[in-house]
Amino acid sequence: TGADPAEVYEAVFVPALFGQWAEHVATAARLQADQRVLDVACGTGVLARKIFDQQGGRGAVVGLDANEGMLAVAARRNPRIEWRHGRAEALPFENGSFDRVVSQFGLMFFGEPRVALAEMWRVLRPDGRLVVAVFDAVERSPGYLAFLDVLERTLGTWAADALRLPFALGSRSELKALFRSADISPVRIRTLEGMVRFPSIRDWVTADVKGWLAMFGEIREEDYERVLADAAAHLGAFLDAGGSVAFPIHAHLISAERPAT
Image (cartoon, rainbow, N blue to C red; front, top):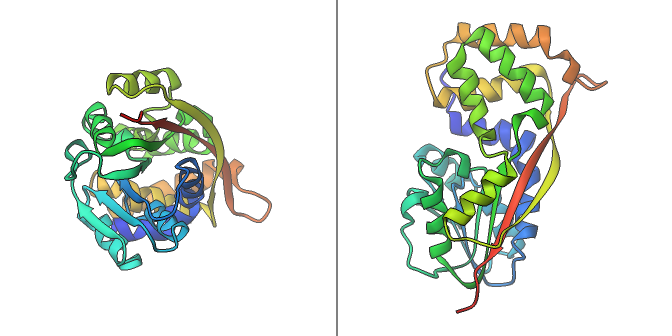
């Protein structure tokens, strides 16, 4: 296929899905002027860019990700943000380095989410604020629930499982327990509705197959065409009157404030 998954992610996923949440997370962070902000699992940088713009280029925004390809795309989009390669479970920063720590749709993918949360809490200064976004259960996103069936039929269980991953922390009670296990409490959880929008079913399939599944295994062109044909046959219910894809998706915003010492 030749396409760089990180470029596909930025070009297709960000406008279709992730861009809308950056505003919500930035608002929940209650940013103030000249603050140091860390975006953990920044991907191609949509949230870090939003915060940088809200700060008017003042303060200092740092984006960290374990994926070099994502960081390369992020650096091309905004070279004034500091982009760092690293793992959420071992943040390369001193205790209390940041006024705000944010993470948008990364927690579900960490090998040790409890350790990652404890690290985010560690680098947050007293009085600082943590905001983490995760997707609600896939059952609350009818389009992706139906797309799971398409992938199961065409590519098999591995592909469906890869698409389930982003929805793995949908349970509010499990989320609360996870944060508690990292000694972060009390936490506030708000569940918000967003919309997934793609210009066409082809764009949707391209995003999820070439921008997402390609990170988990090789996708041959004939695999892509098989998914596309099955999706065209079975996902018409998610097209609006103009032929664009539109369906709801829900996300949890978890926020916590580190007590003053």
